[in-house]
Image (cartoon, rainbow, N blue to C red; front, side, top):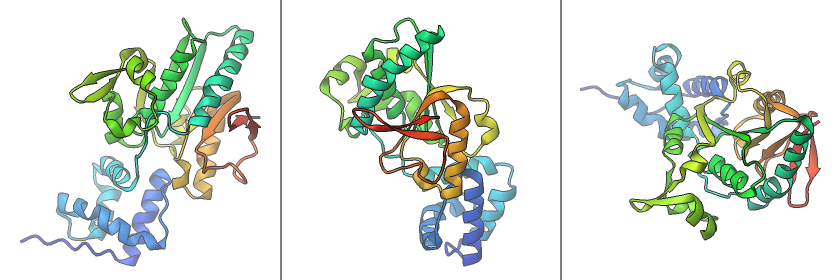
Length: 280
């Protein structure tokens, strides 16, 4: 009978930890060994591997290693989100940033805006952005693109489907539910008028080469994502954002996140409703 050992040696833990970090920037301290043991134990059973050292070799050399690394990221990250999260920041975006963007674009003779939701999870954030843009009425007849990316294929499947249960609407006004969603089998589906604004795609925020293909953005949302990275990882991701933002473009982070001692490419703008970062 095939037997699997779900105990992880310290040396193997360090190898796995470094492999995951180099792949996507997720960091685990020395106290995280039990967490990796517990969450990844089923992967040994799935692939009929004897121990975590064999699993490390699988992640390094198997032809399906990229697919398995994506599964590891799925398992090790929390994808808890909901519509209209961090209300004051969204108010600043809708009532202050969008009018400023429109005025600037008109001066430049342009009628397009591009917004990136980096780490979009199950899609509530980019769809919220789409609702706010449409609700503003500022960009009728414009080319509006919301680019939404995540490193997890699983959450992207949910995002593309666009159907949500009650937990996704804990901060959603009934007005928006009525106007932008349709009831389907006890859940709510985002209407096509919003869905068509959003393009979902897989993207690893550590993959600088692929990020260079994203094109220039007017606004980047990356909220409650860089908390998973160490200082050097944060710097790398923020540099990638700097290179993708147009001059004076906006970067919106989570309220617990800061660029202090990470980048001099942004200044903190004190808007009426909230503080946001703007590319210098």
